Image (tube, rainbow, N blue to C red):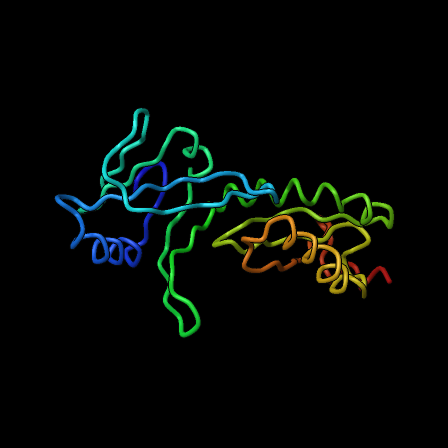
Length: 187
């Protein structure tokens, strides 16, 4: 793994196998990225002959990866994987969880006013392996509509704005210092 991007063992092995017969020396690929119309990065992977001026050069166990300076910020933290399923085979670019978490936080700001209008709120707990975990707060805690809010409002919005998310789930955050026993004794 490099500081800039990560290439899974499956992707590395596949690239070495595919590029080795055509390569005169060490096989090399160029990874590039641009912002698509949706505002999310679009990635490209192609065989390369050599570096261009200003390229970041990454040496990975018998494979050289070139990344141009304009693509480097969009590629930072990305993991390149190779998947083979009965329906599709190819390379998959996954943004880092840190990048996804920042995009989820930004996306939540646009729906937060709707929740706050009813006395509720939501916060991002974490993003791990492209799975976002949210925490309901305020009147959303214990609300019978919380699961509908999660699926119809939050999950749909997040999947639209951050399509790389694999899953969106929610936890309940209890007010500090109040246990379920204390609550039932007060009622």
